[in-house]
Length: 374
Image 1 (tube, one colour):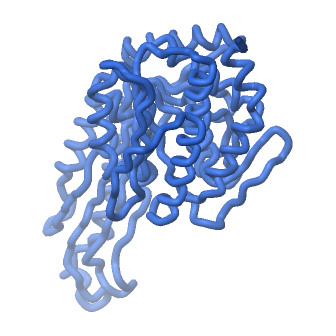
Image 2 (cartoon, rainbow, N blue to C red):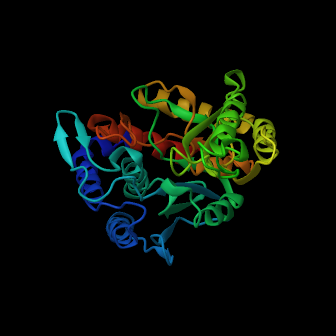
């Protein structure tokens, strides 16, 4: 019987062919019809390769979510991925250049989903029994915050011994992700008092002047040593140059590495006080994704993956990254979570987004072998 690695390597061209199909089924998050068409392509591939039909979880405004169950048993492993992308239809095209395949969502994260599908197919075709059943959850709104899928993810995670996330590996290095920053999104609305900038300047209260003070206060919350950044990405205010500004607004991005830092930063933002007399401040928003903190359980799961890599003839590294994923939700529940198990490549959310073709089979084999050991 061929090994998992040789089985997949011999079929790497078929893995790439499947990947081309799902990449060409473009699926920007905001286009429900397109995401659902992409979901239908995935459904066809799951039927073809695993004989599985999806449990379709219908959504009104976002794409439908898809749930698959492979195998039986009371214990389960959760594999989760998202089929939505950040790319408008027609913005990028699928193409091959040497050992690289380019296209919208190919790296983030359709490559990883196809690798995971083929990992299960390898186990099925080679007659390798798994210790636990596998629940495969494909969602449609990760790129916009997972608002409709978060509860589904957390429900499945609560029933799982481990959560595996075939999001892309760390760009270039191929490292797995054992920690991710949490993400917060806030808005601050500032209300002052309008007045004529020439005749009655002293009667006005400038929301734009207050905005400047608040930006400095917000950016002062950044603490690189603790992995915390606070960034005012959009600042807008005023109506005309000859009017003391009555309104201003700040859009704030927060990244944190621990819940202690999340509590500190949230309290500071929500408790912000005006600098100028007569100003009114209103804040809205909160933590969208909790941090994925590296735990003892995560370290053990990485060590198991590293053992699998050794058996396959390569070395793994691990990293902490600034972006969030659905793995943040599972890790926050205390479920051992390993992220970055997807494609090797570069360019997430960039026009040069691509995967390295001759790593597709290798990383698929890594996931397959890991599934046999959990």
